[in-house]
Length: 208
Image (cartoon, rainbow, N blue to C red; front, side, top):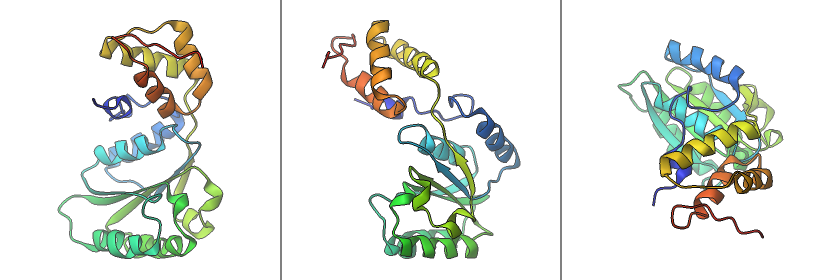
């Protein structure tokens, strides 16, 4: 069974909910066919990774995606990112998405800073993090930084209603609101909770 957070992950800016000012800036980049090095920060589950993947999907690029919570050391930079960034490409640009970059060690961040500079002609980097203060200043200064804020509870509610219509499942307005209130602003947690509560095409929320 496919996870709803992946099945209904936005693939265009029109589908992406919230952060209108940032969306307008990204739209300008996509029209140009190129981006700056970007750093998205904000609380968990609010769409940082979704926006990063959306950008890459709408550019003619080679993509390397890494999650720094799994690969946080300097070897990741040396053995995966540098070979990718320095290799030949037949597309317009190469993009490295480094998810949860605040898990990188300080040594790995310092090496990444130098890599961003040396590969600037061919490669752009998109970093995401929950805690901006864990990213070293020299690395922050090499990226355009955006704070990703969660969509409103009303916007989340409308999005969930659309998802449930697509899945042909029912849920009471009260149960839906309770789940949103409990887990907001973690949109990923809200969607996973709703999907995990489906029984016979109906959302059944445990009172606990």
